[in-house]
Amino acid sequence: MIYISEFLLYCSFAILVGSEIIQLVPQNKRPDIKIPRWLTGALPILIISLSFVPLINIANHFYEGSGVHYLAILGEVLFGFSAGHAFLLTVFVAILLLMVQMIKSILPNRRLSYLSLCCTFLLVLAFGWASHCTSAYQLKGFIPHTLHFLAVCIWMGILFVVAWFSTNHHHWQAFLKWFTPVALTCLFITIGSGLFLMNLLVPDYTDAWMVSYGQALLIKHLLVIPLLLFAIINGVWVRAKLKSANLAHERQIGSTAEIGSTEENLHCKFSPIPWVRAESIMGLLVLSAAAVMGQQSPPENLAALLQTEEPSRLFSWFYRGEVSAGTVLQFTATGLSILFTCVAVSLLLAIVYLFRRKWSSSIAVGFALLFVVSAYLAIMLAIQ
Image (cartoon, rainbow, N blue to C red):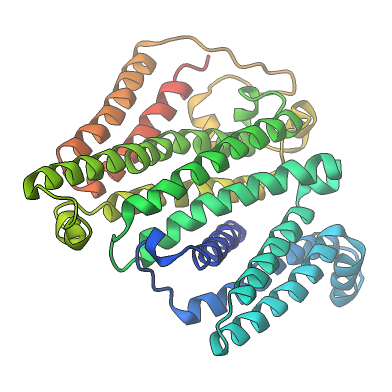
């Protein structure tokens, strides 16, 4: 249950950030988007509710066998822990955001949109404040963790909103013109902050695969590979396809004067939205892996963790040796690992082929999932 609530919390943040940003984008630089009003109002409430679940787990941990009244322990968690302080800030800012949204629905004003975006940013800061990185490393953990989460929310949030709430794909080239550099910036920030966090939390990357946190991290990284491939397809090849189609249409009509008026007819031959949705599905899977990581003990001291925690069941299916605090994983290329590596590479090439041949993006998502399975098997079967 805690994994589901964490996943829903990440999704709520991403959609909230994406919806607040997209509202500030001029209509001629994005497709027409219709987000249900009930959803925008529900997101702050969801964030409050889902942010409270980890506090319940902390309270339950201290309550077992303590003999102290549960409400007293819960109060201590709220007012004595940094996670509790962050939750109280979350409640205050989320209520303020709800008030701004209600006023904005009655009196539309661009300044109110900026104010609601600032409130959303404060919610992200509160989320970062409640993290393990902040409690363990203070600013050294808070800054990279918050930047990492914010960059993911901006990239994935805009992607989710455009993929699932667009009513058409008008002005798609204008949309890609600004979204592509935004996504690239978020990607670089995500990679940079992620590497910094890994240096803090996972100093022994491959050996960390022995525990659940490391397994989730490995699967997350494998999911990122097809996500990036879909991002290249949507950000580069789709843009080139639409640009070449425009040039061909211009030559056909012999004048650029009618280009704008025929944009809808031109784009109806190819809709990029299914492929954006495919990318968003991979993004959701990345968030699900991150949600599992968020509720696992990070292997900052792997030897000490293995003394108190059982090895990952998933890892134990492949590794037949004895796991101890001093275990160091070795890798050897085997026939099966090489075979699955070839299969994984072939599946990535197949996704590109599907796009080139204008086949269904749903099949491409299936190939992406098969890639993750094949790549995972290739790695795990190479462990000795």
